[in-house]
Image (cartoon, rainbow, N blue to C red; front, side, top):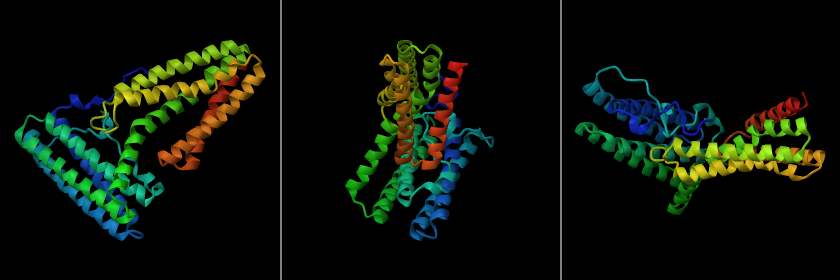
Amino acid sequence: MIPGFSFKKKFSDLSEKEILALAISSEEDDASIYRNYAEYLKNDYPDTSKIFDDMARVEDSHRKLLLDTFKKRFGDNIPLIRRDHVSGFYNRKPVWLMKNLSIDRIRLESEMMERDAYNFYMKAAQMSTDASTRKLLGDLAAAEAGHTVAADNLIEKHAAGDVKEIEARTAKRQFILTWVQPGLAGLMDGSVSTLAPIFATAFATQNTWTTFIVGLAASVGAGISMGLTEAVSDDGVISGRGSPVKRGLACGIMTAVGGLGHALPYLIPHFWTATILAMIIVFFELWAIVWIQNKYMEAPFFRAALQIVVGGALVLAAGILIGTG
């Protein structure tokens, strides 16, 4: 990956027309998510389900206000622009992952959604030069702030929490966004992408020092590339993911660590001893990634295992076949 290269548009480069179009599509998405939450929870948690229904209706009213403003200023042709078209913009979990979320996780997701929306409207209002649009965006930011309080109260009411617990959840969420997500991405890339070159070199040369040098170069190079890419891809203002420097360090260091894990055994001069040890380390690396994905990212364990362990094994096999071919 080329550092900083992206087909996405920077939020700061959006026109007011594009910002309003993005806000409209975002409100549509959030209303749909809340309705799906309500439907999913209505049998076991009817009170919470009703709250999500109410929140969906409020998102609909926001969308209507935005549509009215857009039509007055720009006409009926709304550009197709969504969250995933904008660099650094927050994303939502796909609806089909909802069945894998606990009730507490759904409540936390709703809190995160409202805080992301608040950050977006505040930044958008600052960029607007039209007085009426600026007022609307500021009002919507205030409304989302009110929703954030409601989401906090929802979590506190149903999870028997207090202010400290809510703050702890917020801190945990920030820790995951700033450190765990980029670190996990780096660990996955470093562990899997370096398997083929390291083991291809090992079996092609059967020279442990050469293999170590190749592994060191691949790991450090990937770490620098991934770290820079993460740091410049998102300033964290809209997404709420925190300092780009911290995220870049987490991603870069963990990428290098992922590759060095199975490169370091080749400091051992005996080829088969080093290779067997490297394979054992690879086994533990891949399962560690599965565990992190399951614990922090709410990824279903067996799906994560299939993607990471099976995928890693295929890459490892490809490297060995290339090296012995």
